[in-house]
Length: 346
Image 1 (cartoon, helix red, strand yellow):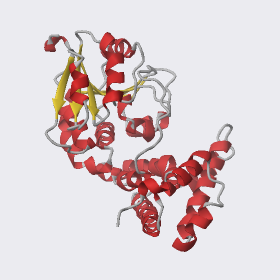
Image 2 (image 1 turned 90 degrees about the vertical axis):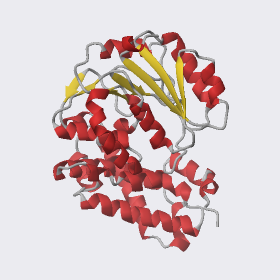
Image 3 (image 1 turned 180 degrees about the vertical axis):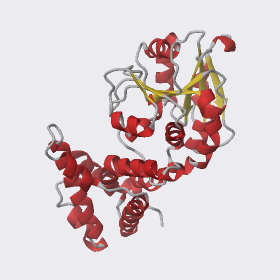
């Protein structure tokens, strides 16, 4: 494969998931052309990741000498890209049978800086170009932008933002920060594309939603304009805050974890309010009577009430109250089944 013929790097960051990586490579291998470089970035996995990659001669293998965390490993995907475009593809987001062909068809004629593809949380019905942050958030959401696999980056437009990525690594969304910065600059364009590159996934949330909330509440700090900080802070509250606080009930096995839940509730709310976020009340007031919005408004109201009641509840009564709330099916199942997974060793 000639490097100078390639326009796209497909970069797969991975750690200790050889079986999932193999399933991904098995789907990608028949789709590769001279226009594509396939790179695997192994975060010092102790399993057979290297042996798996060796079965696919077209794949270039990079192994870190030590596990530097997922953010650093993903950063290497950007740093090592030598093509015009890079697609950072998760090892467990299985590609469609025509993903590479469909993506190349978009990129060959693209005159934008970033391509945001179809995601299950925010599907696009037609191709559209946006060039500012308010326009993007009117047509999409932070949740879909946070999903790493949904974005394809033009490297010439993002190399100048690598320092910002490094500074924002603690937010768990440094790639998101780079893209928000591009939009805020007024010099970048994003193509919202209806092309579907991956299959639907039902993978359960296995990471700490409380940790995510605490770190993501710092994302507005990396924007320079107060109106954009407020816009992003509003979206963080609407899209994540109450839902993830309730999902975080699975992280409250003991008194120490319950107190942590209360601290994170207080701190995240305080962080986002400091940027002028108005909360869910304003959203419900605006949308309660709009056709098609009542069910979502009611769900958000119910979540907000449950979180507020729990935030007022003393530690000794926390689980008694949580067990009596009309929690959603997913929250209730995680709350009862996974609490022991988050016990902090003493």
